[in-house]
Length: 223
Image (cartoon, rainbow, N blue to C red; front, side, top):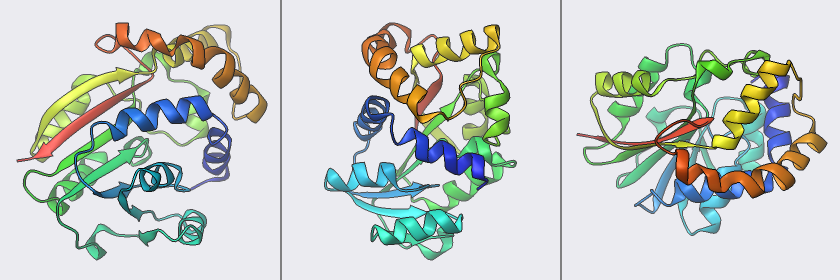
């Protein structure tokens, strides 16, 4: 994890309304008590899950993130091979786009899971809004819906549901790219956006969940 990634994680903690909305959407499609957070970062989603009574196991390779996760007393592993838990859901938020060989990562997750268990992915989409910001946080890609479908099916998953999330965020990125605006991870700007733009326009998601968004929420199952 580079310094830019750490800055992104720390600044996004201040996006209170965004996190509440996204975390609630993801939690609503989880049907088990045991959760594996693959690429847990500093544990913000772990905190949300724990507050909702879930048993959370974190998977993370960055040493600073591991240190913070352990400070919060989360069971933390650097490899899936060390985890022996049944009746679980694997959740991964904004992680696969940082992995060069994401197909191998999906294969490894598939082999780790038991038949009937779910994988929930929250991923950035739409190369039309690719910008220097993606480069800054070490993204290899922004996905297309078709690309996600093909990669999941190649690994053997059955796709249960897909929907776009954060339409206003997609429009914001498009405008930033068009006008060549640089916001970066300025905490004050993120707070302003979260409180006065995202908070009041997120209702648009219900009209665009089949059309486009900044991210996509995918639920897949191991056959």
